[in-house]
Each structure stands twice: as structure tokens, then as C-alpha cells.
Image (tube, rainbow, N blue to C red; front, side, top):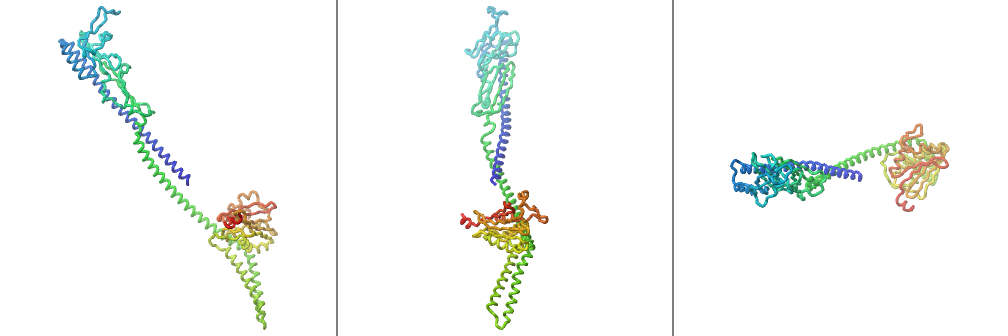
Length: 531
């Protein structure tokens, strides 16, 4: 039963762990997909916003070029006002300059004249940078299309030459860190803006949102911001710590619910197993009852069959007291008819008749009890008395066959809690088997013993003994060496002995012959006395 309970608990634990594993796997897959979708949406949104701002830069360049290089250029003061307005409304544009590109004949240059950049208007005035190293590159770029220049840090320059023959160009100094507003920055991901493979902006994720062990590769989003001349690369990387993939509260809630369901399942399985065990026990009890009834009927049939075999000996036993009754009654009748009856002699004769009548009645009672089909009842029994009564039934038959019977009864008599009739039947079967083994003129010895906590009776003979091949299966049903035997006698003896918590054993005597020992639990008071 404990093994069954252990199996049910192990099954429940296995199911609970399997449920937790399945829940964790499904949660991880769905959470990863959800986080990937969220990263993609965030990346697409940032890409669109940055693209719009980059496009605004080009629009500012175009408008300033139009103001400064048309057929009628606006005054420098007007250009400054526009530039200041742009700088004020777009903080990411750190510096704006309107420059003139001129050739410097005095500057040495292997391939010809050098190009210089003269600042016409700059906003703010003190915020400019030295454009001399970039003047030649700006002068050489395609007119009407902006070009981007990396100058280190998070800043870059955006320059555009006026179309036509004008030598005017507009330069914007852009702070890339301000391309993304603080409220737009995703706290759950690392953000990176690159220009030509060089990082401009690197903003790490909020550590409070991505803390914990991450055993999955992070999610990645990247997309090129392909503005007119402003080719930037936007990258987002999102770590996947276990706490993000599997929410702790949700997991614990599922674990508790799954544990309750598994406990209910285990309880149901145990109840079902208990019902099955009860049904099996009831079925086995019913089968045992049927077997016991069959054994009882078999034992009764065996006793009735034995009575048939003993009929001649019993008839002889009854003939003796009946003959004595008849002769003594006739003698008493004659004594009573004389003139002076001898009353003492008549009384003695009648007393003898009473004794013989009781003897005949006792013989008939033993026959009736032995052949009865009473329900077995375990009561304290004297083994010497059982042996004496059984021998009284078989003595005449043994004498007719010339078989000697030797009794060795222990004193005091050993007592055991048995059914007297069934014990007599076991003893009778063993005596009958011994008589068949010993044959005419043989010897049968019956002993009673009290050894340790056991009461025993031993039946031995001086026959040929038991074969080595027969000994291991001697008490197996339907195993017999007799031509007309059914092989049920010794099997029935074993069943009747085991029913009262005893055992029966067989072996061969050293001097020849077989020995059968029946051991029964000795009564408690006798067992204590023996100790």
C-alpha cells in the first residue's frame, strides 16, 4: 500500500513539474514574440521620427540656400534671423553657418589652388568650428545635394552647395543625441545611432528593466535612415532576462493552481486505487470463502469415504459390546426366573450391560462426529485425546491387517487451539497412508510432543520411505503414487493444518520409513510453562 501511495505522489509531482515546464516554455515563446513585436514597433516608430527630423535638416538647407543664392539674395541680417529662428526651434541644430567657398592662390597645393571657406553668417557667432579642413570636400561635393561629415563625438556636419555658379554653401552642425527625444527613448533597449560604421549615439537600457540572467540571445532591430545625404544606422538591442520572459507572480500563481490540480488528481487516483483495492479484497475474500466451502465439503467427503473404508472394523467394534449385551442379558433373565434370584449377581450383570451399551454409544458418537459436516471451530484441544479417539476408529482395521500401532504420548498432554474433527481427519489420513506404506505386518508409531512454542504429533512407519523426486511436491494437489489415488489427501492435510496457523513436514527416517510431523501453535499458558 505504501508503495502505491509513493507511486501516486511521484506521478503527481511528475505531472506538476511537466505542467510547470510546459507553462514556462509556452510563456517564454509567447513573451519573446511579444517583446520582439514591441521592439519592432518601437524601432519603426523611432525610425520614422528620426527620418522626419533628418528630412527637416535637408529642408532647412534648401530654404537657406534659396535665401542666400537666388537672383536677389536676401540681406545678411534677414538670413541671420531665419537661421536664429531655426536654431531656436530645433535645438539639435547646434550651429548654422552660411559660407563662401573661395580659391586661395597663395596656399601651396600640389594639384593647384587650395579652397578656403569664408563665413558669411554664423549662428551662434561663437559656436562655430574650423571649416578649413573640410572646405575642399564641401567645394567638391555635388551641387544641390547635401553631404554629411563626421567630426567626432555625437556631432556631425551637414553641408549643401548652392546650385548654379554660386560659391555659397550652408553648413549645419547636428547633435545626433537630440535626434531622439528623452521620452521617445525605449528604456528597455540599448539604442545606437551610427554614421559610416562609427557610433554617434550609444544609450544603454535601464538596468532595472533588464537585470537578471539572460540565457537567450538578445532581440535586435536595425534599419538605415536613408535621408538625402544623411545615411544613419539605427540599432536597438533588447536583452531577455528570465524575469522578463516569465513574470514571477504569474508563474507562482500558475504553480499554485497546478499544484492544487495535481493534488486533486492524486487524491482522485488514490481514491480510485482504494476502491479498486477494496473491490479486489472483497473478490479475494469471496474466492477464499468459496475455496473454504469447497475444502470443507472435500474434507467431509473424505471423512465419509474413510468411514466406508472403516466400516468393517467399526462393525467388529460394535459386535463385541452387542454380543456381550445379548449374552449377559440372557444370563440375567435366567437368574431372575429361579425361585431365589441372586440379586447381587443380577445387578452386576446389568451394570456390565450398561457399560457395554455406553461403549457402543461412544463408538457411534465418534463415528457421527467424524462424519459430520459441522462448521470448523477452533477451541483448546488435548492432542493426546485427539490421538486416542482417532486410534479408536482405526485400531480394528489395523489389527485385521496385522499392523502394529505404537503410541508415545507426551505428559502432560500438549494442547493447541484447533478444530478437533479436522485435526482427527489430518491424523487419520496420515495413519492410513502409513498403513499403506508399511503393509501387512508393519509398524506405525504415533508421538505427541511439546517443543518450544509448538505442539506436535508425529506419524512414522517402517515402510520403504519417500522418494527424493516426490518430496518437493508431496503436498501439491493431484500428485500421487497410487494407481487409484487422486492426490488430494496430503494437499487437504496441508490446507487444514495451515488454516490453524500450523505446518506439516515430511522426511525419511535414518533407519528407513517415512515420517510426517504436524506442528501447531502451543497454547500460551503451556508455552510459558515450557519456558
